[in-house]
Length: 120
Image (cartoon, rainbow, N blue to C red):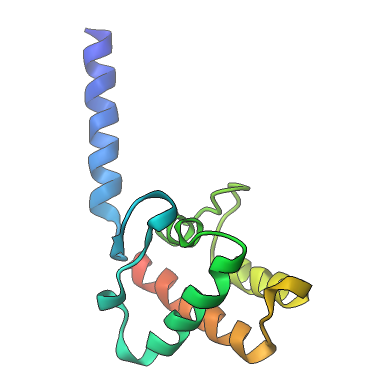
């Protein structure tokens, strides 16, 4: 009986977490990314920039999970507007990021939009 209740609770959590995802994503694992069709036209350029630049160091899966769960997948820290800004500054300081201030601003703006959409 106890196992049965645990399975029901686990199943309910899985369904609730899947149903709660506001941002459309495609793929699994290293191939996971936001669905380009769900990105509004005014953010397409920022989305293209993010998918080109950010994958040099990590997969988009990490970003998708952070947006959908509100937690950074590696550290478990909250992933909200203030954290996005901090990550932007961190990426600006990394010599291998090959991103300038404007590119960082564009990606931060997109991530903040995605966070807002996910919160709806």
